[in-house]
Structures are given as C-alpha cells and as structure tokens.
Length: 81
Image 1 (spheres, rainbow, N blue to C red):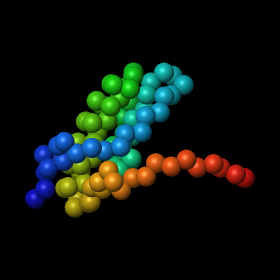
Image 2 (cartoon, rainbow, N blue to C red; image 1 turned 180 degrees about the vertical axis):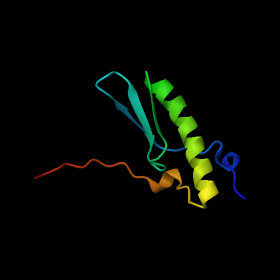
Image 3 (cartoon, one colour; image 1 turned 90 degrees about the vertical axis):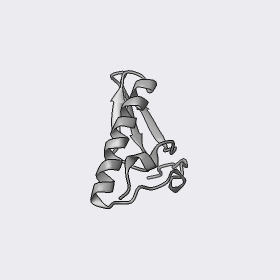
Image 4 (cartoon, helix red, strand yellow; image 1 turned 135 degrees about the vertical axis):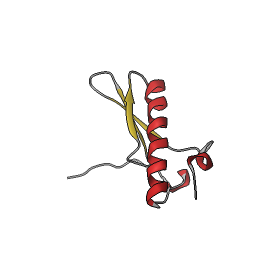
C-alpha cells in the first residue's frame, strides 16, 4: 500500500492569495482540498504542507490518485462578458 513517505521531496504548486484581513490563503493546485492560511506567506506554506500531508493520507486511504505537479498549467485568463 502507498504511503505519504512516497511523496516526500515531491514538488507541488501552491497558490498564495492575500486576503483583505492581511492573512495569506494557501491552496495546492494539484490537490485542491489541501488548503490553509497563515499570517504571512512562509506560515501559510508551512500550514498548507500539513494540510497536503492530510489530503494525501486521505486520498491513499480512499484509493484516489495524487496528480503530479506536471499536471498543472498556470495561464492567464481574461474574462470578457
């Protein structure tokens, strides 16, 4: 059975968004349920790493796939209405 240790040293894409309250929201693009926040970017990244570990454990337990970082593309999008 797979374990979280197989994902140690894997690189994921973190999306950082600063809120109006000054806190920074962090979400893993490949594993969107891995989300957290912090008072600054460094704290948000540390916290989302814990959330990512929990999400990977959950996905392994449920037999769900864990996408690789290469599965994510970041591109601009202009909304035209």
